[in-house]
Image (tube, rainbow, N blue to C red; front, side, top):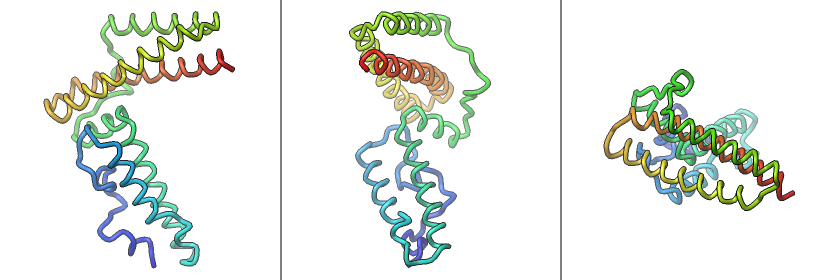
Length: 184
């Protein structure tokens, strides 16, 4: 059996949504996404083609990599929004548009300073509060992206929110790093 025989009708160049046979939208059922990923990975896993020869094993590896890439992007709501906006023909300009509302930037700077101070003081409680607050803010942003992209088709506002989300996710990483340093 070849890899292509296992994937009738599948196109290597298909977009991530088509590859995983999911609707092209921001709001996705994460359980369905996980199930589609596991099913597809089971079909293309290189171990399945050990007896099929080197060419089929390489092809299986390429498919497995492709499926994994699609899954990783669709699993992250922020990355999914960025990818979806691009598919919809809207350039989110994440590299060139650094304009942010002043209030948002001030809030981010204050949070960063609080995290740095809490880390320096080994204040685990303050870091936990900042972590929970930021997780809540990020979850709200994810819900707003569904509304903006899927229902309102306001791609400019969605792009602005994606850029804010990137700031928040970076800060969340810093908080996680600080928590790890304080608790180890």
